[in-house]
Image (cartoon, rainbow over all chains, first blue to last red):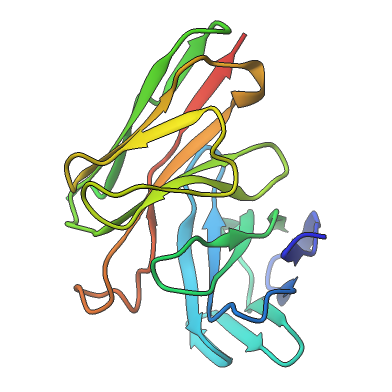
Length: 111
Length: 118
């Protein structure tokens, strides 16, 4: 079993919809939780970063971490066609150590 | 400010050939990483470095070697390329806690090197 499991998708939603992207994990040592967006033929770019549990909001994006359930989510409000990309969750136990990535969820937002 | 630059962007090799992928960062980051990404999969860590002159193995180190002789550069070598190493390779760098705006930017990625081995 993988340490990080990500909802596989793909997801296709109409413009303006609320999108929910989710990952579960098994390693209770994970303390750092990240969401990356990756456009085709580009490197991942960081969207949200959370340390330990809780919620974090940045514009249309909200990241949630529930360590008791070992579950993290990324919500995108008022989704736009420009949000069409692959979203990767990632986690690590320490700052310098390796990050473990989910396999990614491909999102398409249709105008 | 270029961030993380990977060279080359594309390469085709024959089985058994060797090559070196170069990653350069201009942000004075302490930590650097090499990942590979295969279709439909997330990133898997090959090797990483927590400072100049140091290296450590990741999840999938076999068939690869690395060197970090200078802080700004992290080299990934394939000694004898195999078709199973066909992949997209990403380099990333990360600052030390307390260095600059680390809270908001824990990891910066390059745009990848697309490597095909025939």
